[in-house]
Image (cartoon, rainbow, N blue to C red; front, side, top):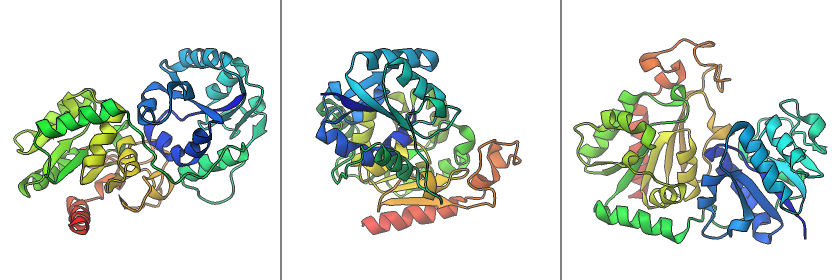
Length: 336
C-alpha cells in the first residue's frame, strides 16, 4: 500500500510546531516523514525507523539524498511543510506524482495542489495544520508529542543522579539561539542565573558544544550551575532533561518549543519574533515580548534598526532583568 510523505521543516521549533498535526496520521500508519536525522530521536520511542526517512546532508546534497530515498519508497503524494523551492524539486526528482504545498519561493509550477492560507494572522502550528488538512492528512491527536527512546531516558537519568538533582528544584536556562540578534542580552541572562543561584536553585545551562566558551563566560564564579554545553546531548536526552526540570528560561528557539512540548513551564523572551505567531504553545508557556511598531520584523538586523546595548536590537534591549525576574518568581510561585 502506498503512503503519503511529509517533508519536514529544517528547524527544531518548526518541527515541534508541526507535530500536533502530524502524529494522528503517523499513528494510523498512512504517512512517512522525511526530515533532518536528529529529529527522529524525539519519536523513536514510539515509531519504528521505517516511518522516518532521515536526511543527513545539506544543500544540493540533501536534495539528491532525499530524492534517492523517495525513489525507494512506494509514495503516491507529498506534502511540503518547508517553503523552499528545493523541497519541491526533491519530490519531483524522487518521482512523487502529486505534491501539496504553499506556492512560495517560485515553486508553484512544481506543485500539484497549491495551498492558499486563509486571511488573518495564523500561528505557525496552524499554518502546518492547514497545509495538512488540504492534503487530507490531518488527524486529531491528543497524546504526548515527544517520544524519546529508552536509552535517552537512561542517559538523562544518569546525569540527574550524578549531579545530585533528585528532589532539587532545577531550572534550565538556554541563553543562545541560531541567530545572535535574536538572543536576549548575555549580561542580563547572567544576572538571572546569579539570582537563581542565590536562591539556592540548581541551574542547568543548556547549549551546544559550539557555545561552550560563551557559556563559561556566563557562569564564571557562579555556584550551583551545571554547564551541560560540555556534553554532546542528542535531542532525545535533551527532551528528557527538560521534562524533569521545574522551569525553562530562554530565547525563542528550538529548546523552548521542546520544553513546552514535554509539559515543562517555559518563559521565552521574544524580540524580533511574535509569540502569537511562532512562540511555544501550551497552558504552561509564558512569553515576554515588548511589541514595537515594527514587530515582528523581517530580521534584517541593523539595516532596519540601529543596534542597542550589547549589539542587540532595541526590542530586546527594552526587556529588563526585573521584567523577566518577576515572571520567574510568578511561575515558581504557581508551582509552589
